[in-house]
Structure formats: structure tokens, C-alpha cells
Image (cartoon, rainbow, N blue to C red):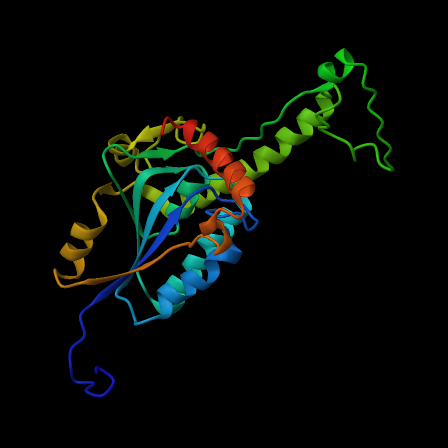
Amino acid sequence: MIQIFPFIKRKPSVAVIRLQGMIASGSNPGRLNDASLAPLIEMAFRRGRPKAVALVINSPGGSPVQSALIAARIRRLAEELKIPVHAFVEDLAASGGYWLATAADDIHVDGNSIVGSIGVISAGFGLHELLNRYGVERRVYTSGKSKSQLDPFSPENPEDVARLRSLQDQVHQNFIAQVKARRGAKLVADESLFTGEFWVGTRAVELGLADGLGHLVPMMQARYGEKVRFRTYGMRRPFLSRFGLSLLSDTLALTEERAMYARYGV
């Protein structure tokens, strides 16, 4: 109808992108990554000329690479199409989840949201004593002395640990640079900001990690008018998983994700 009668004034719209779940490559249901989100993000920015794009975030983080790729895609489109981006944190925007939030021009949280965890973590198990207990001999052949580093079936090697921590430090510095570049002078001078600590929403606002308390609908209505329309874009479960045909894969993915959420008490 609007195409037939172009003089009819269209109601303003806000494209809402739901970013919920752990951030990781792969095709497991519920995982956020650049490959799976790219079509949704592109559509959200380009379809129907939205007044703004809103990111609704509920994520414990995950892959720093995928976090960076998703955030960079959002920034490229925002700058290319001159569309403002607003982030709204629900339960959690921690680690890579907060990296996604920094793609927005402003960040709003609930007073009870968990925000922060600007750091890098790597976890695993050491199983060499278990093998020794049952008389299992580990045999590994490599053509490079570092090829089997961090092998969970071998005793921990201090050189391997030092190398891993060096890599983590580099990723951590990239994370810090992203936060400083996007939040700038809004950040307060607090030594705990980049230690991996996390806070509830009200404290995150005080620290400059968020701009204020607020929820999606009332804030977008206040900024773009009470008649603003919302178009929501989010990940869908694969067709087969709706019928329980990928139950094992879904269960393992859910267990991993719940473990990540549990670190933040949610």
C-alpha cells in the first residue's frame, strides 16, 4: 500500500536482533557465530529502513574471534547505513557477551543484569594420573616439540602453560582495546574493570560499562515515538531438532551452555 501511495507516512520501526546463547563456531542449536547470524544482521539493517537497530543480549560469552566478527559486522552496517544501534542487556552480557554489547552506540541494562567479565579463560582436565592408575600407556608421536602441548593425558608442562598465558594476554589486550575504543571517556578509572570481575547492572552503570537502566520497549518508544514498530530477528532451532532427532547433540550443547551461565550465578 505504501509503495502505491508513497505520500502515506510510514510508522517508524526498530529492528530487534536477539543475541541469546553462548558464542561459538559450529552449527549446534543456539550457538551465536558470524556465519549463522550474518543473514539476520544484514536483514535487520536493510529491511524496511529501520530508524534504529536494537541488540537484546543474553550471553555468557564464548569465542573471542566470533565475538569480534559479529561486533565488527554490526559496526560496519551501522556506519554504512547511518543507523544508530542500541544494546539492551537481559540476564547476562559477560565476556564475549559484553563484547557484543560494545558494538552498540549505547548500552542499557536491568538493575539485576550481570555485566562485565572482561578477561580470557581456558579450562580443561589433567587425566595422566587416571591413566597411570589403570596401567594405560600414552603413546604420542610428533614432528615438532610443541605439537602435543597442553595434552590432557600428560603431566602439565610449565613451558606450555607460559605459552598459553602469553596467548591469553594478547587476546585480553584486544578485548580491552575494544572496550576502550567503544566506551572511551565513559569508563571510570577503576583497576577492577579489566580483571575479569563482573557486576550487577546498577554498578555497571556507575563504572561506565553501561549508560543507564532501561528496557527495550519503553526506551525505544521514548526515543522514536509511541507508535514505533518492532521487527524481531533471532536464531531458529534446526528443523530436525524440533522433533528430537538431534537429542544427543542438543543435550551436550545445552550442558556446556548451562555451565557457562552457572559461572555467573544465573
